Image (cartoon, rainbow, N blue to C red; front, side, top):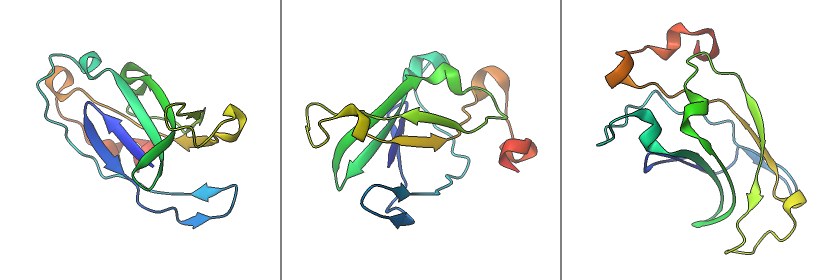
Length: 122
């Protein structure tokens, strides 16, 4: 899996377990500041998740960054969509689902934050 936020990429590496129809990644990224020339968090655009086959994205999920500003985020299930340009997954029902939680905080506007002080991240 690859996560793209504001042009910065985060990769999970190989799945913890994998079968023909199931992969479990179970990866946690550390709190990571992203320094970028944006004026506001909405300038980042979308959060993009990519299901990778080596270096090739085969399925994706995309949502507005503004939906990830809750510092006490809950897990959410999202349906992936096949990347039609790549064409490795033809049927949208076979693209899969992913569960993840993500919090993005605008330090410029709201000051510093320590996510470990929130129940979702402790």
